[in-house]
Amino acid sequence: MTVLEKRGWNLEELALSFIGFEGSASHVAYQKRIVGRIVRQHGGLGVGTGPGALYDQKKFDTPYIRDFLLDRGAAADVSETAAPWSKLQGLYDGVIAAAEGAYASLGRKGWIMCHLSHSYHAGACLYFTFAFVTGDDPFAEYDVVKSAIQQAFIDHDGTLSHHHAVGVEHAPWMEQDISPEGVALMRGLFESADPYRILNPGKILG
Image 1: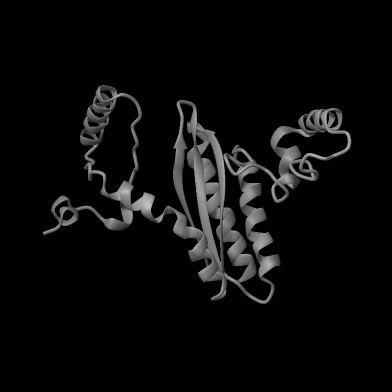
Image 2: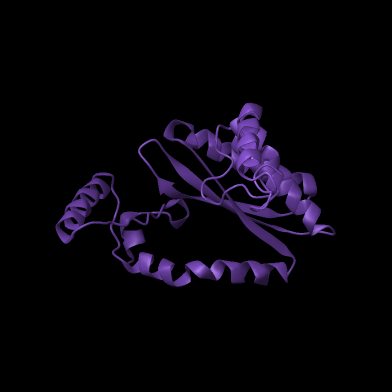
């Protein structure tokens, strides 16, 4: 009998958390004791360092998997956002609904998953991975799905991005994210500091 069977857990309903500790040996030991106590109080199970070690080994495989999928008629990408703890559930639900709505509008089969990649006292980052079977115009279809997800971030009180930044692709949502006044302030700063547009022109503000 496996641990899952013994505890009556459903693999489809489980959540896995990767927890890292920093500091001196004594401080790390202290943190581990506290976390272990919290996990046990909530019926969880510590599974050791194996999953984390496997993640470190495999985390750079994703671009190769993406290219493999592209060659076989499927597009895949990620989008990430952040919000206060009180907003996370609504944000998650809104993004999932937006992506599924985009797939339905295209008549394409698609998937979207999410993990909480960074956490803070005030809130957390939701990191979405999505993929779908492409049709005759993969680029246009991608824009439909990606745009639906990004707009859902804004509509449900999330940030435009968390750590992937704005660049060119997310620039159309900047005014919604930081307000027209915020964009004007940034544009004035850029024009004052870089009047000849030498430093990475066209990014962030388009």
